[in-house]
View (tube, helix red, strand yellow):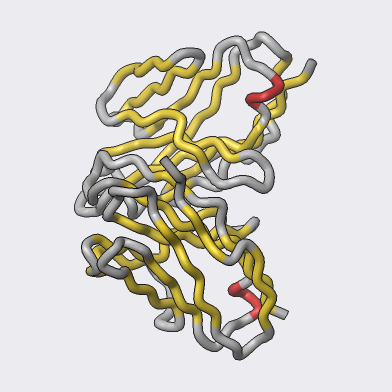
Length: 113
Length: 114
């Protein structure tokens, strides 16, 4: 079992719809959770971080964390073609610093016109 | 403020050679970490340096090494290159080291081993 699992996609959503990206992790002691966006040929860019159970909203993005179920999700409202990218879920565990992240392999999102 | 700068952008080497990659963090950032990204394995942690000391190390062979200088700039070295070392090597910086620090990635060095 991979430590951080994501559906590789592609996840295809029409413009203006809500995109829902999911991630599960195996280390129950994980403390910090991040979503990075990576455009093709570019480096990862942090878009959301979440540290406690519940929802965290930032503009069109909402991160959701459920430590009991060991999953974290990212909702993108009013999806735009510019949101088409690979979304990487990253987790750090107890004893590790934020720099020692375990990444999922990413979900490719395609927003169609 | 300038972002994380990595040089060179592209490298082509042959098996058995060694390579050195360079990373300049965002001004004021003292933590530098390195990741390897491949299509099959995704992003994998190599090591982190903070205040010139290696703080964490991933599960890579000893052929992969790094260091950090007093100005926080970092280099990583790969010796005796293998075909499987072909990857995008990403450097990331953060102001400090800690669980809630956010990483800022550079554009990476694309290494091809022939």
